[in-house]
Image (cartoon, rainbow, N blue to C red; front, side, top):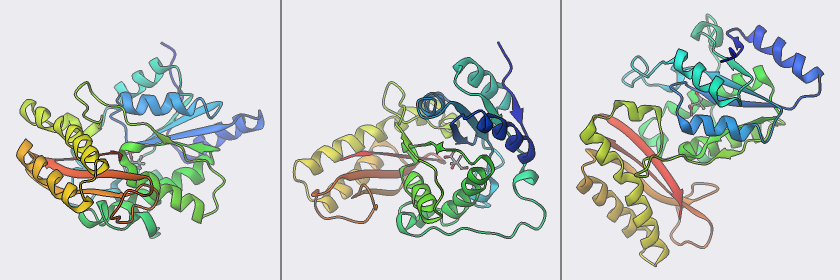
Length: 282
Ligand code: PAF
């Protein structure tokens, strides 16, 4: 199998991309934290319908993990990630920088995005979106892509990144990539690797419960009642705790009391110690 070129420094990344740009190529970026699964590979294939060259970044970003979270044990599988990308025939370059390359000595800059970052994930992971925003901003400035894609599984993250890109006047399209699911509907996630066999069975119930509650809301169940039903259903299914299950405006994530505009149901819950998120249109 042909080897994929890897850049590990910003200078190398910029040099390779500027060569392509001189040839008139449209550049696409797929930011990831590695431990690649079919969901990521689908993003890489999709970006190839928007761009001539696909750059995949692999960087486990310390800024988006709180000290008590799983930064140290987050799966790091660069060798198999590279094999999967090479086999996909869609990636043209991998950017795999070190922490020091991305966060130089004395790093002291932050980005705070308001709007869609309020509530939901932020209520439980208050550090998260500032950590995502800074690393995504740095990756976008480094690669200067024409288009960058983010999965809809992290729906709130997708809206926060779109907000930041619009607010900073970055001329970059941000399409969302559709959620790729296992046979029982579990949304693919690198963190699914943490689940033991019993937890894996429970995890598969999340999307079924979201689907059911979305249906009830569509059929007229008041939104607050549907959300309460969903919380109870997750607990009954074996989730150890529920951070939120909420039906929100699909564009702003504002709270709603009726389904007059497009809406989205979003949930975060723990099975054992593993925190899972999922969402779908209502
Ligand atoms: O969704 C992810 O994998 C990460 O949050 C991202 C966007 C690559 C930033 O580290």
